[in-house]
Each structure stands twice: as structure tokens, then as C-alpha cells.
Length: 298
Image (cartoon, rainbow, N blue to C red; front, side, top):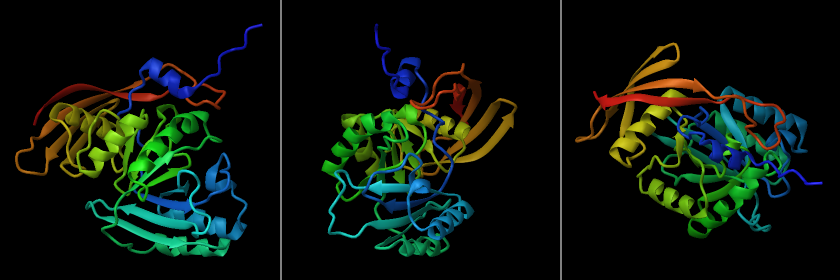
């Protein structure tokens, strides 16, 4: 009797040619909690910490629309150094805010709640998060861990493994925060090249899923502009107008710097046939993709 081949959602997505552009989840704030033991499949929600503390953190995160992620250094880090937590925020004016602390006891995580309501400190280097959340989806571990290892060798102070960031089928996924930039479909070699360019403020469209302060059609439109013009800085272009007509969008994108053009991009949404979109999901799902039907100087 032949044993059926194991299903991997990232392999299936590549065979289908699932597009990356327009798949970054919306959001501008992140709570990071270093946790070196095994991660539950549902991340922070599944930790056995004091229920009152957990409830306070989750409530504050919901109020600020922040995603809570468990993090750890590749290789689990040094046991003699206390675990850290952070609140990262991306403001619409382009300012980055970060607050960092340490925790020894569950009650120390109450400081996260205070930090979520505070202003934060600017001018910290960004954090590079690699999803390696195997209990949530095997592809995240199989594809994410080699990427985390390769990036950690080059930028050991910036890189953390993290729990589920969304889009398992695009593993390996990398989120640069609080820049709010998602990359997907990476391997060890391409990840180093992508992050190197990102840290030099040259965002390439090849593995770009999108900017988290934009909605999916805007993400797809901006990706199309970058494919047309070449790599650009995180804040080189701005969405000036978005007009929707049912499943179509007309999006005006302008360059903020001298010499950068403006563009009119037309986008159409398509819903794909149902497929298994995750390794563990038994039911089928139908993903939405965004087709660029027109891109012209505007």
C-alpha cells in the first residue's frame, strides 16, 4: 500500500503560483514577548501564565489593534539573560516607536499594558521577525528555521524567531517591524539579500507581500509601481487617492522625492478556486488576489 505524500501548503502555493502582493495583514503595532520554551499552537493565548495578566495584555492589545507575538533568538538564546518584551509601533507620519523591557515573573508583563498606551522611543533599529511557528503550521518551521539561522548569522542583534504572522503558505515569512513590511517566499539566500536591501532602505518587490499600513489593493498597486520603477525607500511613495467600484480600484500613487513620478494604477480582485491554504487546515479556503489591469504615469 502506497503512503500518501505529506501535504505542505507552501509547496502547493508555489505550484499554483499564488501571488504575494497584497497579502500583508493590516496593522501598525506589535507586542513581542520572549518565550524560550515550546510555543503552543495558538501562541501567547496558549501560555500557562497568570490568567489575569494574560487577559490584561490581550485586552490592551485589542484596544491598540496590536498583534501579540512570542519571540526567541535562533538557538533559544542565553539562559542567563532575562527574557525581553517589546511594544513596537509604526505611526502614519513614518515615525517608529519602540519600548523594551524584561520580565522575570508573569506580573512583570503588566508593563506591556502601560507601554501600549505610551509614546515610545524613536530611533531604534528595526526588528527582523522570522515566523518559525511549527506547532501552528509545519511549513513555518521547515522553511522558516533555515532563514532565521542565515539572518541571525549576519544580524544577530536584530533577528528573532516568532510565532504566527499570517500567510502560512508564503513561508518563509519575514516581518520587519515597526517598519510594517512583510516579505514571503524566502529561503536562506534570498532572505539575506532582501533584508540587506531593506536595511539600506531599498525595498525590492520580488518577495514583497505588502506594507501593513495599507489595505491589500493598495499593497498590490505599490508593488506594481516598484516592479516598474525598481527598488525604493519605505516612504518614497504615498497613496494619495483610492477609488473603489465593486471589485475594481483606481489608486493614485505619488513620489515624495524629487524625480519620482506619480502613477495611476488600476486593480481588479479575483477569488481563486477553493484550495487547502494551510498544512493543518482540513477545510478548503478561497484566497483573493489582485490583478494589475493598468499602470500609467499620473
